[in-house]
Image (cartoon, rainbow, N blue to C red):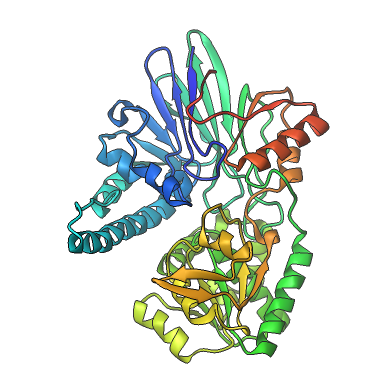
Length: 467
């Protein structure tokens, strides 16, 4: 019978990867994500794959975020030459994100090797190169929502809207093996019903095996109205204090949500700042992709845009300034006060937000807004956990800025939303919790038992089960 191996995002939130194998030798990989967080987690990206990439028949990717797609270039550099299935929008976003990730891998290796050369240490190679990313992109096979596609012999894939980011999908795999068909459903990252722009996650009713994400399995998010009211109060306080507002943001999803919310404030007359900077080349390009897929967005938000005769998200916020070049980015800290600066990365593990932290984090008048989940071991997690200082660019920087967390901006479903979505299945599937820290999984496990009388299994890394 067919087998399922849990290879990544097991009792943690990054490195999503699952392998389906049939008795006939067919192998389909579900997601191929990058491990992020502590150094030991990132070092896992260099370990050999738990399978022979050259013998994989197909890859299906739930969405473009790097923790779900970021090891695809390494997969192809290790011999994989088959198709990579994802939605059309996800393919465009992955093209952008993987090229950027490869550039960063090359630059990081270059800087590391300068240090190693001076100390007589052996040089390292980048995890993968831009050529590897280009090869991965050449293997993309775009798939429409709700379109059943034969991805390998005996394996039919159908992608449903997950409502998380543009192009995100719930993956349904119908696996036919030894005269029987079993349906595996992977939730991917389920969207928050209160998020702007995205539609609500599609409802599915049939599954034999369900892999359910549990990023926020321990709690619900605040309602959108309360979150927006607090956000507006933070912006007003920052204007009174005369400091900048720094918002570390994921380039895909969160940045576009922030543009939408700030645009609403602007048109309501409740945005005190006179300048908003989108200081992320990737977020700028990702917003361009969102603008090309406006018909995929939630009809209510799309109506707000068309009602103002606006044809792209950027038009909603006239004071938005994009700073694609390094020179434009550096000029922000030389000339700007009382501005809102949205910069990557979302968990503060790299990118331009670190430079803005260097110039602002030690200022009591500065406000930092953390709008999303921060993994253990990341700089963002250290800041929200109350670190008095952090190390940036070989310097110790005091944390004197006012720190705010706004969980209501999360693009992930909260516990109640996860339970609501799971309750739509007509019969109880064999249920496994993935993509979450263990304590979140335990809380969701308790919630599933109390509300649905379902027993959820928390798998171990490398565990293999029969479908």
